[in-house]
Image (cartoon, rainbow, N blue to C red; front, top):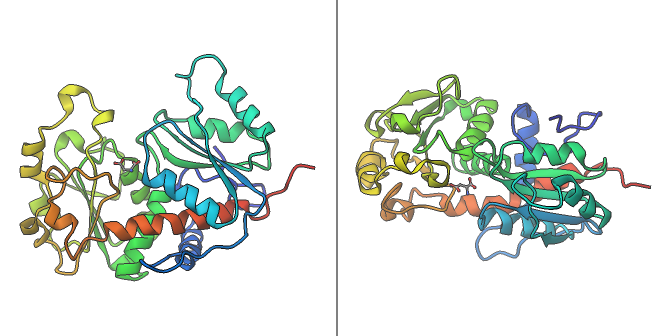
Amino acid sequence: MEQRRSDGSLRHLITLEGLRRAEIEALLDHSQRYVCLPGATPPTNRALAGKSIGNLFTEPSTRTRVSFELAGRRLGAEVLNLEVQLSSRAKGESMLDTIHTLESLHFDAFVIRDSEPGVVAHVAAHVAPHVSVLSAGEAHLSHPTQGLLDALTVRQHKGGDFSRLCVAIVGDIRHSRVARSAYEVFTALGVGELRLIAPSGLMPASGEFPVGKRHFTPETGLRDADVVMMLRLQKERMAAAEIPDGEDYFARFGLTQPRLRLARPDAIVMHPQPMNRGIEIASDVADGPQSVIRDQVRNGVAVRMAVLEAVARARPRPS
Ligand code: ASP
C-alpha cells in the first residue's frame, strides 16, 4: 500500500517501513515541541481547526485511543469515537460501505485499530483523496505511532546518536506489533546493536528481524544494554496451549532488579502497557528510577499531534 502522495509527502501512516531517517527525525523534532511535562499546560493550536477525525477501534485500547483523541483536540479538530465494525467479521453493511458513509459525513482522517492484517491498508486504498488513514495498531504487524513514541523516549534519555546504543527487546516478540515497529524505527535511526530476548516459542520466525541478535535468556541478552524494552504477553494472539504459565515466565524472563543490574547502570526500562506486573516485570522495576514508562505515555500525545499535523499538511479539500 502506497502511503505517500505523488509529491512524496506522507498521506497515510500505516507502517514505518520505508520512512527515511531524516523523515523520522523531523517527526521526532516536531513531536518534541508538543511534549508536555507533568503539571504544565498542554500546548494547543488551531492547525486542524475545521477538520474531523474518526477513531475506529475494533480492538481494546486505552492509551492509544485517548491520546489520539487528545492530540486531535489539542490541534483544534473535532474527534469522534465511532462504534462501527470494519473488518470482514462485520455482518451486514460491508466495510467499504461503512467508510463511504462516514466520508459523506465529512471526515478528514480515520484512526484505525484492527486485529486483522490488511484492514487499515484496505481502507486507505479506498478513501477519497483528501482523507488520511492512520494505523493505531494492526494485528501483530505494525503500530507506527508507538514506534515513534518509543524512539522519542529513547532520544530524550540517551541523545540522538542511536549508533552508540544497544537496545534489548524482551518477551513476546513473535506476536508483538510494538516490537516490529520498534525494529523498523530503531534500524532506520541506525541503532548500534539490537537484541531479541525471548523463549523459543515467542521468538519471531527466522528471516524476520534480520538485524536482531537472538538470545534465549535474559542473562546473556541484557548484559550492558542501554535500553531494555519489555513487551506484554499477547495472549489474545496465542492458542490456549501456547500461553506460558505466568509464574514460570516471570522466573525465566521477568525483569527483576537483579536482571536489570546486568544492563548498564544508566539503562532505561520501557513497556508499551498494559503491563502484567509480576509476569513480565517486577513492580519495583516498573515504578523504579530507571523506568521511563510514564514518559512513553506522555510522548504518545506529542507524537500523535505531530503525525496528525504532518499528514494534514498540503491535504487538498474536495471542491
Ligand atoms: N498497547 C500496545 C498495543 O496495542 C501493547 C500491548 O497491547 O501489548 O500493541
